[in-house]
Image 1 (cartoon, rainbow, N blue to C red):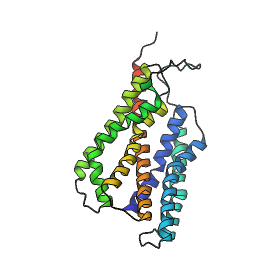
Image 2 (cartoon, rainbow, N blue to C red):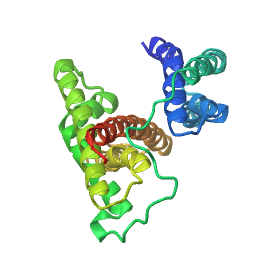
Image 3 (cartoon, rainbow, N blue to C red):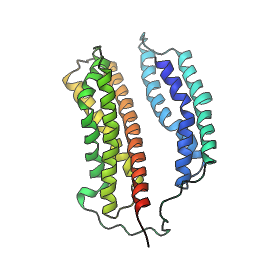
Length: 264
């Protein structure tokens, strides 16, 4: 169950380190600090929220609190398995050949024209997240009901289909908005492609507030804190995952169009 998933995440650290090294080298940001952030940034935030919620459960002497020794074991797996594997994968990735750009990059940044209001980064990021969130909106209700209302969830086949649709939607919305951005001569696409699809996490957190107000009947303060703590972690995980899908899809798209571009 949870232990197998946690161990699987730890073992995937080598893949995360390898991808970090290859992309960082391509963007000329090759440093071990970047690798270190790969190992601690995401799991550190998730563990921090989880630890604070577990402290509350300890204070209330709740039976579902994670024992201290088990928590210590999770930290040990993180620091002595996951992070070393991240560095191991990065060491191999840094030795890989540099991914060259399809076209020569001008050393002098080009002038970016004044953008219209609908092309402003904040407007595009806030609006774009509605598309991938809408693709999984209906299924999300049943998932939350199984988590918080103890209802059985058995439509795993439909869940797999929705998951695939979500991947395609995250990729498509980032690619389309990056294309529009390049058409308006704004070449700063890399972080925005991440936020375009990643903003679906904001919609998930907003929906969790709506779900709490309309469906749940929580009155105790600590139950409310635990609910929003878990939903914050879920929203952040969706933000990182969807943003990664959007960035990788946009990166492949940009490489493809500039590979096909003929320059005299």
